[in-house]
Image: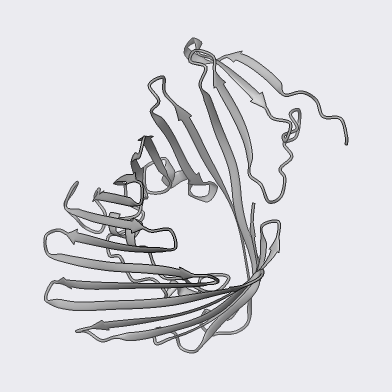
Length: 321
């Protein structure tokens, strides 16, 4: 086994006289380079000298590469993407946890609350602000999707409260039961704070769960969600139903998926039926993922949707770091 230097501790006096200490772990090489191990996030721990509490900044990421024909004129094309995410955490003297999370490509939005999120937490309570899910989406979620790129995410039952707006999400988890309350800040044309809100609840029984959610938008429209799932050995089944009324229009959205795992390979299928007074659509998807180990997987998917000009598909390798 090669020799590793002991953890390096550097204490400096920063702005306003604040003294901070950086402890570099043996998994990091501290000098002119920072070596990251594939398949595991790298972390730098900070011990605040004035309180003695540990703080951390974690660097992680994901990437993909492959081929796809999911865009007009439906010719074969390459697809690739690489993203880096920063996550920070700390704790106050009173035991209040706090932290943040944002992707490097969204750093500008994270600075004004339209991307990433910041949170405080204690016990089972958590309050997050930024580009957070609605309370109903956090509780109910969606059925399983397919493909390397998501292929339009036709598995989603649309939660209509907008993303990319400064919003707040309060969550409480106590045992198997969790509750969520969300308030949209000023997105989607709403007049201001509280003009759009959402509620959600979930009971997690381990191998099964049930959930319900509600979204209200400017008192003119509302949407209800019901969802559930059950795991039977190597098979996972999920279903989500949404019902929306507003502005004189009635829409329903019902989706179901099944995941079958055989060793390192998972096969997925979903169906999503959308019905509206303005017209409807059916979406079907099939996919497969084979775990190569170390955070890499071979992934392929195919989707047939009324919203597409023809059947679309993709295939390639996904990577988590």
